[in-house]
Length: 215
Ligand code: DX5
Ligand code: ZN
Image (cartoon, rainbow, N blue to C red; front, side):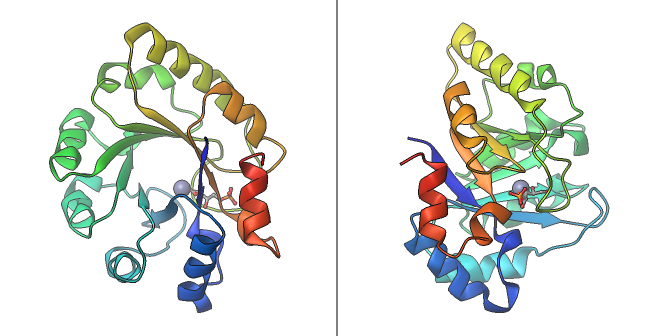
């Protein structure tokens, strides 16, 4: 069954606590948290202190998506908050293999993120070490953008790699996900769908989440 990870970026920040509770009650599997630094992406969001509070007030698995230029400097501190998934952009690091190990040594699932313009083949050497890969289906930085179908070729390539090498990493897709593309993504092999504006713009979060799971 596909896992749905609403992105907090699209919630009502004035009522963040209530929004998280509503998302949990609506059947979200994971909470996706977008950390932006204003350097790697042209936007700023939240970081360690906010995620620390979220961890203390909720038991939902937390998936931290770092969109920052120096993830190696911050990775340990994010892991120490008790998060479940931590991903960094391949475009931001010299030593992706080392950083994957650093995150896994903390007992957190380690993921590599690829921008739409980054070839998926660039992760082949570390595919056996990472726990998940996050394919961006929009250029990172903002919620509410249109889905880029070029992600399908990457997804298909990853599914072949998994089969050929008998690997078991999860595949997460992030950006522009709605009820219009969730079925095809699921059929192509996606394991986790991140959805921000689609879920939070709904009157009924539970209905939105169910529609992404095709139930
Ligand atoms: C974009 C973020 C996404 C974003 C998705 O940089 O990584 O997680 O919140 O938002 P939607 O689903 O609205 O495209
Ligand atoms: Zn994200």
